[in-house]
Amino acid sequence: MTILGIVVAFLASSIVLAVLYPLAPVIGLMDHPGERRKVHSHAVPPIGGIAVFLGLVAGSLLSLPLITPQHLFRMAGAALLVVVGAFDDRFGLGPRSRFVAQVVAALFLTLGCEVTLTSLGDLLGFGPIDLGVLSVPFTVFAMVGLINAINMIDGIDGLAGGLVLIALGTLLLLAPEIGAIQILLLMTIAALVPYLICNLELFGVTGRKVFLGDAGSLLLGYILVWALVDAAGPAGSIDPVTALWLVAIPLLDTLRIMARRIMQGVSPFSADAGHLHHFLSRVFGSARKALVLILAAAIVLTGVGVFGLLTQIGQAVMFYAALSVFVAYLLVARNVRSLSDALEQRSRSMVSELT
Image (cartoon, rainbow, N blue to C red; front, side):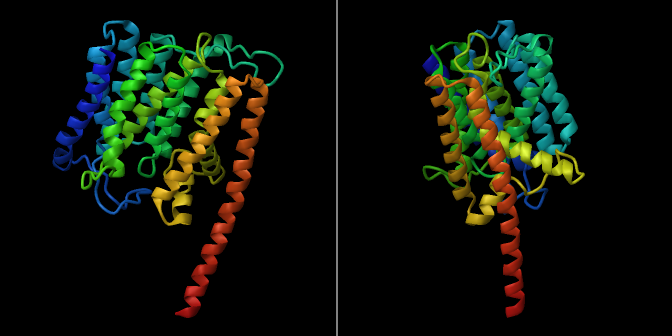
């Protein structure tokens, strides 16, 4: 039934994409160019997240015990984020509605499914950091933070889906056995593949481009953070610090962007073109090249985290290494941005002199 559920998840997602694609313009579910930080040249339906969710539901009907309270809470949180995200894609609800939905969904996981971080491990080298009564609020904070990170990095074709695919695939490889959680992750990947094929126009599929939309990026962030917290638990397959390496790229980019916006006196949730993928797209003149570079970097950082886990390098060493990477990233990003601005200004000056 597991294999059948995976196949059904793939087929259901594909069918939903085929059905919704011509209906999206009719119901006004389109992502138009020129809005906020949009870089595409024509309207694209943001229906990828809806397809992934319905594919996941279809697969779950065959492979998972839906009547258990844990699975009901899990799917309720996913459904909430997809519905709120879809309404945001259609009507522009804004960050406040998304934030409330994220908190409620995180509470479904922590209180309904008992998916919580009880310890951060020996991060600082002075012994395990037990969260105690702070377990639930810290877990909710971490969940909302990562869901937002995936949502905010969804700025070029294939990026959010690709990053989540790398992280989920790594968790599956590290899992000691195939249980309900791993089956859900496999079905998520299966339901994600049709979206990626259409979004990136792979295997000759053209003229059917779709986006994840907020519904999709919120859903993928939710599934990823739930899988990470569960895997980093007492009986899990990874250390809490390993999770940082698996999601290093979205965390690094989001923390830098939000800090910069706060220092500029604007909302940390406001949209702009200051993300890593925007900068690399400008430098290389191609969003596809930026995608390949970022995903390659994500694979390398994930590999470092897995290497530290398998070779049993101290958790504190891995944490300080992750912190060093973050500091180095901030310094490089700051200097590269200044150099980019200087080169752009010089280029404009030369064009102005020639004309």
